[in-house]
Image (spheres, rainbow, N blue to C red):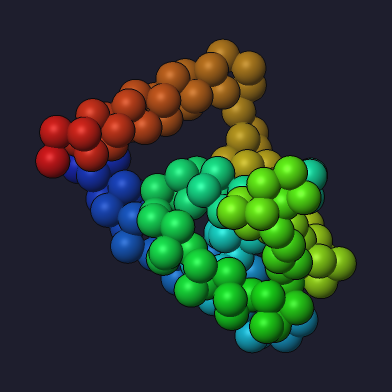
Length: 148
């Protein structure tokens, strides 16, 4: 099999399977009440200081209205805290609860294992080539997104 065919098959299979595989890996018995999409919202909120709804919506490339629906569910399930800003009552701030932080760290561990598996057996120059190739792929998708 030539390089083009091999890379095409690997990419197509990865893109078809990655969300399903990630969901099976991170939505465990402890976090069975949330979806993969919810986990990515938790990741976007992060463990640091509270963020505004508009900041998180922008990071996820969704509208504030779309995010609000998901946040309502995550607040109800105990993953997210929501408060109005003291400085500007129009601004809604969200942060992770203790349960949300546990989910965040669980997701982070999955990603760390994924990166470790990807880099296993590669020397520094091979890692540099991989990073360059992945950056090219990312750039392609961003250009395609903007053109499409």
